[in-house]
Image (cartoon, rainbow, N blue to C red; front, side, top):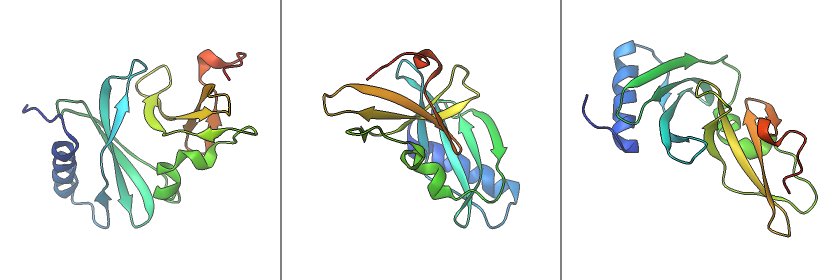
Amino acid sequence: MREARDAQSILALARKLLRESGQSNTAVEEPIEVRSPEGGLHSWFVPVSSGRLIAGFYEFLPDGTLKRFSTYRSDQALSDWLVPEKRVNCRPGETTGKPFLTYDRSPDRLVWAVPLVNERKESRLVFVAGETAYPPPDAVGQETG
């Protein structure tokens, strides 16, 4: 397997797989890095869209190996899935930082991690999976900011 460490290489692989699948009315979107809890590159998430809806995704390991492909129900807007901040309720004085894709305990449980920062520059994370927002498991019962 050739090295495929950048987004453009991963995008090319996903386009090839989608083309070979014969699926019509679908397209691959820009790859998104999936970060490990330590911050390293774990994998690449490549959304598959059908019009304005998210139809599924490819997940590739950093070397370009296909890890999995999954499909979604057809009524979830791609823009809703790609903008996790819309699912987070900030406390008074909090603002959202830049979300990043990671996982909740197991690499098979992809989630968006949305940093929230208050006026004192204290921060906390909120995980977003689909339409659900929740604190990371290690933060349950803790006040992190």
